[in-house]
Length: 272
Image 1 (cartoon, one colour):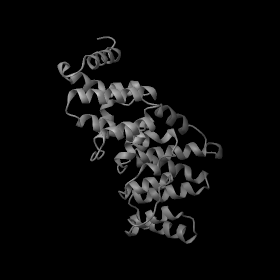
Image 2: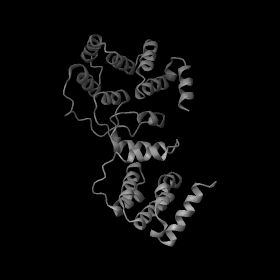
Image 3: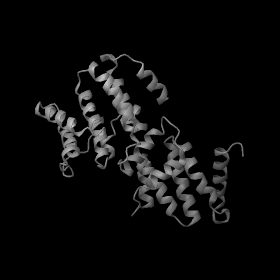
Image 4: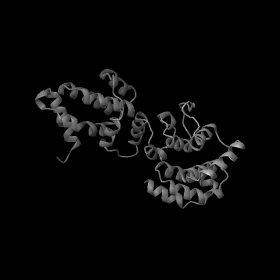
């Protein structure tokens, strides 16, 4: 789907009507680390638009292409004319002049796309609040950010499951990156029921794998699956937990637990 959209956007004329999608095309390639395609498009398109986005994007390209002297010159000109927002200016200053940025207050708010790319370049931890308001046309690409915090990645991937099939192995890999100290079984289940998001789902999974008693583990997982079913997430959740449930020794489970697990397995594997 993304490939088809890219093809369509690349064929659109460079007009104000389509500028939003032309910007999307650039940000898409920056986020997937295809700087060459992004900068080539910027070079061919910048003359057709007057908005500040293209001037900033061109400056970013100069930095990525290691054209430091020209980047510094253009940066100084733009700064002297007050053309830069504070965040962009601070981040460029960090890259070009090694200015301290650790104490800068980015606040817990959505960051503009180009600023987000700069944050990733300087290895700044990116939280979910910084990306939460990005549209679904960006969700998949945002997962390529190297310095996206584990909690933010879990929340992002969870949102993506509504528009794309996500392999349970990928979910597990993401969940494993989250710190799991001091997790409480009752609290995690309660949180999942109140707010079934990616982070709470990750905490439930992390709690489940820590339970050693087979019967307790089965009971905890089945309780979470019931909640997921109530929130229309049963298919993804069942696929995630079935391998764990069928690995539990039947003689360590109650009769009802064994029957439910067998039923879930049958529904999840209709041909077996």
